[in-house]
Image 1 (cartoon, rainbow, N blue to C red):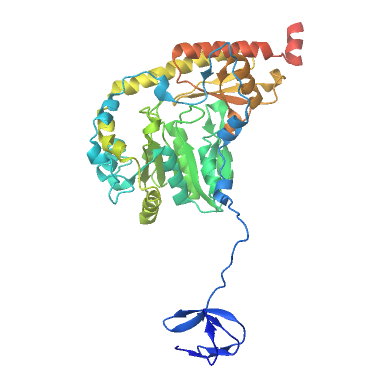
Image 2 (image 1 turned 180 degrees about the vertical axis):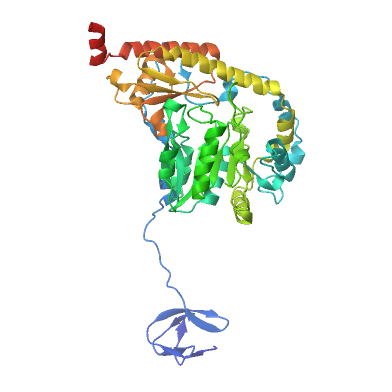
Length: 463
C-alpha cells in the first residue's frame, strides 16, 4: 500500500505501534482511512450514551408577547352574556361587504397557478409588476425587480429584518408597537430598542427619544404608519422629521405599511418612501387588511433604494432569503393583478366608512366613562384606551383589568402590556355596529362598578 511500510498488521484500518505511515512512524495505536492509496488519521467515532434532543437557541428565544400574556390569563366569560371579542382584527367575519375580488379569486385557473413558481421564489414576474404598477408614483417609482412577494406581511417583515441585521445589531421599534417586531428580532440575536410614542400628540413619535437610542450598531428604524395598535396616522410634516433623523445617522427604514390607505376622511397618509430623497426604505405590505383577506397570506416588500445605498447586495439577499420557503402562494399570485386593478373604489370607501363609524361610537361612548381615556384614531382598525389605575384599586394592572372584564361582562379587549405599554387596552373596531354599542355599554357598567374616587376627588366634592 502506498506510503505504508508495514512489517506489521493493519486490521480494519488500525495501525499498530511502529508502523510507518506516509513516511512517519506511528507510535500510538490510531485509526486510519485510505484516501487514494494513502492512509490518513481518522477521527474516532463517538457514541452518545443517551437520547438528548433539545430545542435550538432560536426556538428558545422566540416569544410572542401577545400569546404569552393571553395564554396566561384566566378567561372565563360570564355565561349569562354572549362573548364579544374586541381583541383580534378578524375582519373577514365582521365587515360585511361585497368583496369583488372574491369572484376573481375563484376564477383563477388552477392548472396555471397551482404549481411551484419556476425559478421565481420572489414571485411571478407578472404579479410583481402588478404590485409595482399599483404602488409606483413619480416620487417613488417601482419596477417588478423592486418587489418581493411573500407569505403575508409578517414574512415580509421577517425578510426585511433578516436582510438588514446581524446578531448583536439593534433595531428601533415603536412603543406601543406591533409585537412581531420583537418576536422576530430577539430570536435572531438582535437587540430591540423601544422608542416612545406620545398619546397626548395622537401617538406621534418622540423624535428626541428615538434619536437618543441610535448607535453604531443600529441597523434599521421601524416605522409603522398607520399604526397597530394605536390607529394613528402620521402627517407629512412628521414623516419628514423622521426621515431627517434617519438621514442624519445613515439608518435605513423598515416601513410597516400594511394599513396603507386605510385612513379616515380628513387625514392623509403618504408613503414615507415618496418623501425620501436619500434614506433607503423597505416597505412591507400585503392584502390582509385593506382587502380584508388575512388568511390568503399574500404580502410584499417594496424596495425603495436611494443613491444605490442598498445596491445589488440587499436585493440579492432578499431573493436568497425568499428561497427558504419557495415563495408565496401561487394561486393568490395568479389573482393578484385582478385584485389590485378591478376592486372598485366603493369597496375601499365602504370599509373606511364602517371603521370610522365604529371608532366614533367607541370613542364617544368611552369618553364619558370615569377612569377611562380613549384616544380617537385616524385610521387602521384599532383604538387605544387609557386606564387610570388609581381609580380602580380592585385591579393590579391592565392585564388584571381586562381579565376581570371578560369574567364579569364577557368582553375581551387586549391589554396593552402585550405591546409593552401598560395601563392601556386595545379595542378592535371591526365588530358589527350593534355589537360595538353593546360592548361599550358593558365596559361602562364594569367601570361604574369598580371605579373609586381618589381622595382629591372627594375633597373637591366637599368644597
